[in-house]
Length: 408
Image (tube, rainbow, N blue to C red; front, top):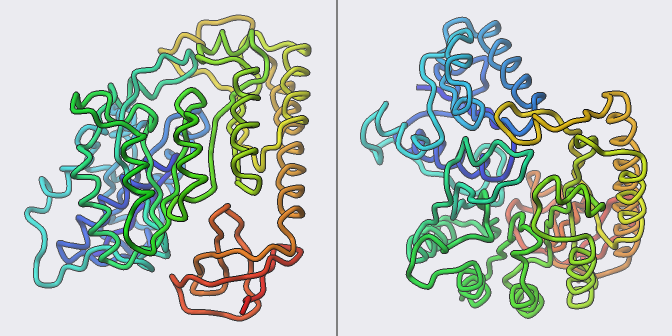
């Protein structure tokens, strides 16, 4: 059996797809392109209307190019609108998020057959592993549909997570990204003293040459303790992703985000003081209902002053069933697009400024792209002057224009 996987959305979805792919490979399935596969699994996102549309377009295109293919659809869009998804061409099964981890076994039986090969670095073009330790969310952001598609927060036991890390390291992975829908809530539902801090501490003390990258953290969950642990351990990447969403306190209240712009500024200052060369990314929503010119100016001015290194910009779109979908007034689409353009330009300047600040530095990184590029701990992706083996640690000197030279 030949399979293909198409994944939309967040790192959690990427981690889920790796679990699915591992299950298929352990049963002897072979990777192929969607045009040549017998089965295509489409792992969908539903954070915006455009994400839903992208999934529909992709499924229709796959069915058109591969008329005999069987399409299995999972993820947040499949969970939110299963009837709509099942009506798309060649869809033979719709798998809700809660069934993701088990559906391969339910469809194809036990794994670990004689021809099965589990995931390892380099499979399907991946070098680093994304490991999901938590799913679901108990927060109530007014714009977000994810609590309805992922359910309440559920954590994997700390012992199970560490077992997964050991297996990944034994398989050859040298970088592991730890992710969750609400990663900062890790352990709260376990009632055994587990917490994100305990997990990060265990990873920071790991006995082995592996780098752990902490995925997106809500600002209120990025505690001084976690910042200090990242600053004090060579096992933890100097890289944070801390979603701001907006720089106006009135907008944050409307979004039901449990922090203020002042708190966020203080957090970024703390991270930058402890880790002067860290990568610090953020998410921004433009065009939220009620956002006027003054609100946007507060956002723009705050972003211009923050020492961030990159931005992900999301034009607001209504998600039926959310509180924000009922809020008025709506922002005109042309205004949303213009505000998105302005914020993306700010993000580009941030990225350029950060890259320029790193020029001449000697850093350690992991080779990717079949050894043609390197990704550093602080999330710079650079083209190497000399091709190396894949998945190798190398010492490099950062040059201009996204390049790096090997450092002796």
